[in-house]
Image 1 (cartoon, rainbow, N blue to C red):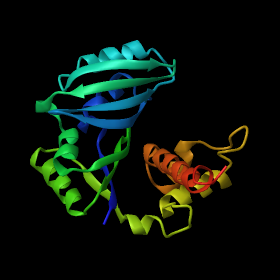
Image 2: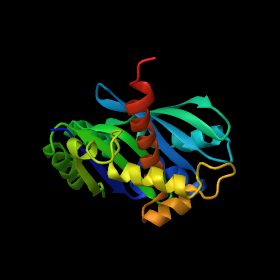
Image 3: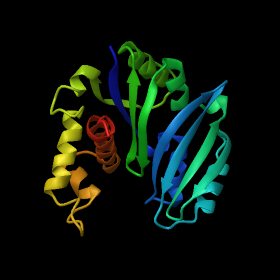
Image 4: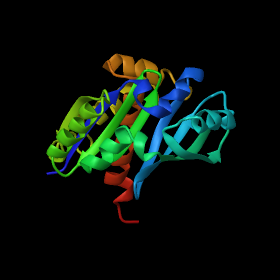
Length: 218
């Protein structure tokens, strides 16, 4: 039975977190992860109000964990990057490949990283955790759900966490113009990190759209 799990780890435990040393306000979001022979190539966005994505690229260029890194799109305050991991420095990327789990979303900030993973069997998460333990990768399981548990709550294929985040954002005026709150305040109210709250909103939007607009006949 398909299951979902959320793992968290410190900002410095994932090599891309090196960017927070010089840009503590930056935020990263993995866009997708593509296995490729003996390595993986994650595509990821860097959000930084200061811009200067070429300077961000220079930080990633200096990481021994990466074979290469390419700036795919430079949109000023955010950029899309593609990295290729060195096999000997795979870290959590190695755990993803070894345990045969899929990265649904991943986000990072100075406060840490949150990875949401999907697996066909719960034992895959045990293998993922074991790989991380063996390679001294300090991950912590934050949440585990079977897929049936995530689709029987409030409807529209929303988890309870996604429903809670969407409703809270609506009630606090996050969608108003001008906004009456921000992600930091909303995350603090739920007692979770900003990246975690942002990820819940994004997954909630996706599930809501899939269950309504996308799945409807024209």
